[in-house]
Length: 507
Image (cartoon, rainbow, N blue to C red; front, side, top):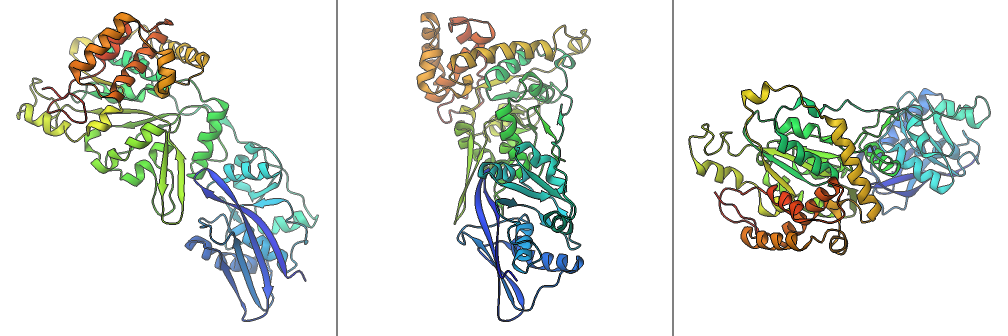
């Protein structure tokens, strides 16, 4: 009888995977199963799931002490996907599997009490890790279509018993097929929005350069309608972006039967969302909404209603494009390169001063807008006032241009940015900004005067240049001219109240 056997699986640190060796040894002593190696509650409970699964398939555990070690022992282990490697290592240790069955394979999956295999989050990055090791990947049948996207050999089994038959040559398991590449949910068309031509223009600029955007206006003005149409203006995910986004969603358990989509993510959390829900964290450091919106749009409606702690936690990810979640014994990093779209009323009453709806006057707007910190607003490139929609606007015929026409211009503008090689305009570094976005003489003079008059911070100054570069790209202009700088400056609203963080808040 084989008294010692090893299986290989992976541990997750964000999207990164680390090799974990599951060592099972049958030794003398008190009868029982012991799992060591810094596992969480789900890992420790694996002992009972595996014991019940063995009984269900008629497999007896010999007398003695069965010790399972998850190495490296100082690496935290979280999740139910350790069930399958633990079960297979134990089966090999007691002789239920051939001694070489687990050579050069990576095991992943949850085991049910009846011996059936259940899916676990993270099958795609685990399969990618197995492919990188040059190993086969063993997973539950429900994860097969997801794991097949990684390439390499995938063994997707419905149960422990089917794996035993497969390795003993009784009934080979057929390789799974990849999941479907679906088109995603239908995106509403810009033609549905009546009036709000400046809002549509701002939306097009935001999509072309991946600029963060904030709409401020009374209820019913169409702020949310505009933001919901933003993903339709953005080009489909590239193959590299598709893989990264799909791996994130796999870790979060959001991939259904291995179906992938090139449609960019659109996440719209409620304003009651906590800081951990927005930026990630919690007991198992899961990705938050900002990471689930990676390469897509994060829409925050009623922006001032979010907790100040949650909003300020967005500042660093908006700047760096990633989230670092620190724990006492490890750190987890998730990508978070997003386009932030937000909407808010001018004041708590909804209308704001002069709109005929606010009874408290300017003080209401000052107090409400003061919930947003200056540093956060400094990271939002486009801030636009959206006026109320009139009856005359609603009576207009549908616009001639819709999402398709605007998306075509966005595609050409992004193509120009790709040819320059500096990335999208919103993420240009200072060197690239000086090379690609330096305005002409009149434009530079206008920007210098505006920076002094409006007390623009250095960040706001550079972000204005980036928006001007995007406007020039939409116009097909190689040079950033005065007209482009002027339009970029027109997309910086004046805020009610006092100066905060270098931003003018003039009532």
